[in-house]
Every structure is written in structure tokens, then in C-alpha cells.
Amino acid sequence: MMTEIIAINPANPQADRIRRAARIIKQGGTVAFPTETVYGLGANAFDQRACESIFKIKKRPADNPLIVHICSMKQLHDVAEGVGEEILKSARLFWPGPVTLILKKTDAICDAATAGLKTVAVRMPAHPIALKLIEASGVPIAAPSANLSTKPSPTKVDHVLQDLDGKVDMIIDGGDTEFGVESTIIDMTKRPFVLLRPGAFTVEEIEKHIGGIRIPKGINKQLNSGIAIAPGMKYRHYAPKKKLIAVEGRALFLNGVKNLSEQGKIAVLCSNETADRLECKNLEIIRLGSEKNPYEIAKRLFDSFRLLDKTDAGMGIIQTFPERGIGLALMNRITKASYAYVRSEAELKRLQNLIT
Ligand code: TXA
Ligand code: MG
Picture 1 (tube, rainbow, N blue to C red):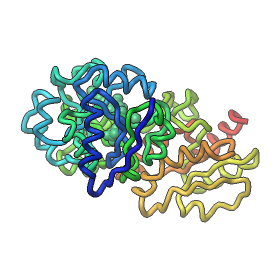
Picture 2 (tube, rainbow, N blue to C red; picture 1 turned 45 degrees about the vertical axis):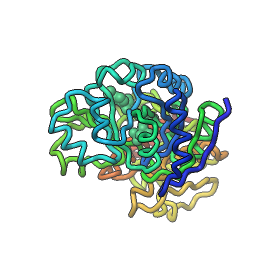
Picture 3 (tube, protein in one colour; picture 1 turned 180 degrees about the vertical axis):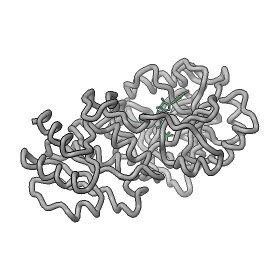
Picture 4 (cartoon, rainbow, N blue to C red; picture 1 turned 120 degrees about the vertical axis):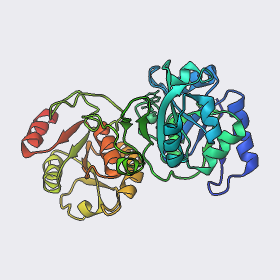
């Protein structure tokens, strides 16, 4: 398929270009577009065939539902049912913004968009291109992240091109995304509300607005490998192709870098502060930014995973960050991308025996 690549100004989207993209959505096609979190791969949320094509293009498992994007509070009622005052209040606080709410779905939303569930994930993005595109399309847009399944989410148009060029009808180049991690997902069909995915909007901020939400134990303990260096970490998710090892604590991290680099070249994904303390040779250093600004680190994280795979290093080692504020989402993505999570000298030894 020929993919049309079109640049749109994020600060002031050109109306004629938005119309061209919207025409594709209306005709049942697929358009990759920027949001404030990551790029999304969009199709008409009312169109079963269009939404099915998203799954085919991404090679996404059929049981993993999409997020439906809306551009107004009025449109919320086209996608969700039984939206009472309590939910409206939350929606008004968070939207437009990087929060996705799980609600009861309307019949109009196609089964593919929700993977057959009776609930729907809804979000009003805070990005002028996304909002204008939904508005011009006249329909809600179902959009998962615009990466191939198992690859990191795209934060740059280059990432989208790497994964989807030739597979989708259009890719909108709207520059780098602002947050670089996906939206926070809250299940509003349960009481208390439940956090399903930590994301760009912090839990602390959410709780300030709507009170306590339930955070399931182990939400940040899912590794991509089947191995359990520490117990209870046996899940699979996206990851760089190269093995990535997360190491907690600066001293242990520096020690891990030293030991692992003795066996061959490794890539080091770390803060500027940590990078300044690295002394070993045989390293490919990928700086994530200053620890003083964890938002900067979050913004670069997915790009750093893709950079890791481009290096000639045998594996990567990444430092961990405090699970506060945006740090919760940051650590959630780091853990999911990691082959192992190391917290002690003993675990480091065990890991070295395992991988050498
Ligand atoms: O920031 C974001 O959320 C980006 C941009 C494009 O909006 N989208 C995104 O979509 O990250 P995706 O498909 O990569 O992640 C959607 C997540 C999945 O983990 C899925 O399981 C969950 O939303 N989800 C969707 N519908 C759901 C439902 N009805 N119940 C529970 N989880 C749901
Ligand atoms: Mg995704």
C-alpha cells in the first residue's frame, strides 16, 4: 500500500490537510496521528472493518481492545452509556488530557474496537491535530499506539515510519510527542475506581481531584521475560530485541555496568547524573536526561529502547527511578521492557550466571 506522509503544524493545523486525513477516516481507512502522549493509529470507531484492519496492521492480539478518542463532551454520549454526574465531573477535570476512562459502551461502538467487551476505553486527547482530526471526521476515532505490536510506542514520526510505512493509508508528521508515555487508564466501572495503567497523568494528581483510587498490587512488576530473578515477575510484554536489565540503586547499577561490560560491549541507559559517574570502557551510553526532570526522561524512554536495538551492544542495562509522580509510569514501562530486574548483589550474580 502507498502511505501518504503529510506534515501538519501542531500549533496551528492546516485545515485543508486535516480534511484530507479526515476523508480517509470517513472512508474506512487508517491514519497515524500525533497525540500529546504517543502517536496513535486511528480508524472510525463505528466501523468494524476499519477497526479490524488496525489489528491486522499492528499484528495486535484480537483480545486487546483499543482506546476510542473523542473531541467533545457531547461526543462522550455517542460512545459511552450511563454516564452520570460523578463520571462527568472526572471527565471534565481530566479532559482534554492524557487520561483514559473505562466506561460502559454504546451499541454504536463496533465490537472490534472493544475486543468484544461491554466496556469502552475513552479519551479526549489534548493535541490540536488529534482534536481537529476527530472533529473533521465527524466520528470518534479508535486508536491504539501507532507501533507494531511488541515494539515500543512511537514518540517520533520516524518511529511510526519504521513500523507502519507502506501498511497504513496516511501518516501525519506532527513532530515529537510531549509526554512520551501513554495515557493513564482508570476503570470507572468499579468502586473505588481502579488504576489499570499508570501513565502521563500522575496518580497523585488524580487523587487530588477525585479521591483515592485502587492501585492493584504488582502493577509495576511485569517483566517481558519468563524468568523470575525476584519472585512474582512472570509476564510478557513489548521490549527491545536486545536483553534489557534494570538495576536498582546507583552503586549496584555502576557495579552491574562494570561486571557486565567485562564480557562484551553493553549499552547503558541512564540519567545524565549517572552517566557522569561511568568509568568503564566498552560502553554505548544512551542518556535519558536529568534526574531533576523525570518528565524529560519519560519523554526519551521509548526512543532509547529503539536506539538500544540500533547499537552493536550485546545487551542494555537501565537504571531505575523513584516511583513517584511520573516515575510510576516510567518504572512501569521500564519493568515491562526488561528481561530482568536486579535489586541486590546476589541477584546480580544470579543474573550473570544465567546470561553468560
Ligand atoms: O496515550 C494513549 O493512551 C495512546 C494514545 C494513542 O491515545 N494510546 C494507547 O493505546 O496507548 P494502546 O492500545 O497502546 O493501549 C490501550 C490500552 C490497552 O492496554 C488495553 O488493554 C486498554 O487500553 N483497554 C482498552 N479498552 C479497555 C477496556 N474496555 N477495559 C480495560 N482496558 C482497556
Ligand atoms: Mg500500545
